[in-house]
Image (cartoon, rainbow over all chains, first blue to last red; front, side, top):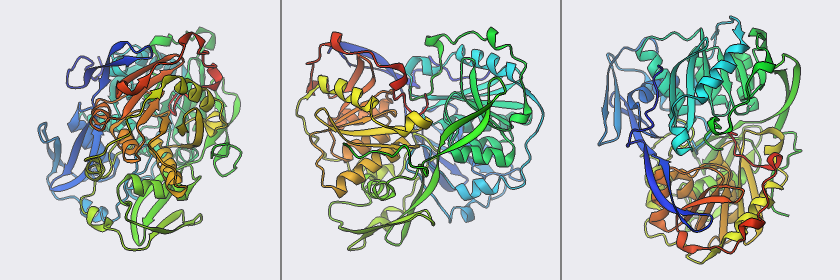
Length: 285
Length: 285
């Protein structure tokens, strides 16, 4: 059983009453969204909007994916205070993050970059594993992810990301921000010493530059999405040799980078149609 | 004819070649994503990731929606440099934005807050128009938006936002970030002196706290989406008396705030099913 969100956790969703298109009372489940302020030692780094589960993994993964924590830093503690909505990641020695923060960029919401300079710098000289990947595994993973318990099926309006190895889903995370879900995966991998070079990352979100950069920085050589691409996302994937697959629905997918790694071992006539009700359509569908 | 993106503008999308699920060569259009750094006078404010159209409206609307520009500021010029990917909004007198920037928050991507303190402060004492809105207009607007020329139909992976009055679409903007599309609308409204109190905003994106706050700060009393809600988004809408409608597809919708304003004048049996190929499914579908 992979690590998962808990759809029955009362802290993650709320039942609200409104009306439907006929003016009739209508009760529905809605996902929670709350601020979480991440500190690195004494430095306030960011306030993320999150559903609220796995705050320690989110904080750790965010700092790793932003290049604010590196392999040379030793994490000594991660302290979460639910009342203050604060999580503090502590390291043995001070980090150089104060310097980096001098050139701050902030964002206006979705698909908007954070400290892009740092993130792009981390890609210099990066070499992702170039081992073959079998397309049959993609279909098996899609099926499994569609049948994994999820908050999305309860509330909609969130994204999911799965870390996979072969045909196995090792970790599945959800959040209002698709980047948060990826960061939680990164934090979980780091805390559990999980290697990246033989993994596949699956996301319901779009393949933007930031999503591709995060995946590459995590060392994962394959990124799959139900959703579409941006041109810059494809550019970066090609630059670092990441296999990038988008618009994967039912039998179909499009691969715009790293296609030489694909082994087409799936008989497409044997791929079952997705059950409509089971689709993880992405948070905005 | 409303103001629109230009789907045939070669700067906004690119044709890329990859392979499909059968390993066959496959050519497809992909949306561009590029950085745009916004300055307010001499102060660098943010680097947004955007498709690149209407940079002046994006910059102006962003600053307005963040509360960095207020009614007391007079905008004297908006200068865009395509080569530097920089846009500078200039005001007659210095603004107080430097003070505000002391408490910076940054974001980790989608659905993540920026300078939330400032934005929330702008909601204090806000009173949105409480005039009735007719549900029949929502269906007519949905039909029109589904039939408006769009980049989404070419490339996917973007969000759309429409400013509407009665059954008319006045402005339709698209972007990789759903907040960017809303900011472009805000900039267009400001530059053209368009009032807000009788307008309806339609978005393909989710109804998160930030989306609701922006709409309320713009003074628009009705926000409609194909997508779902977050609980905090609903909380804020209820606080400011904004009519919030989500999950609007075909005949169906859910209203979780401001339902007293709705006039149910639509015969639902006469609502045509959406044509599958014409749906604006939201960027992640």
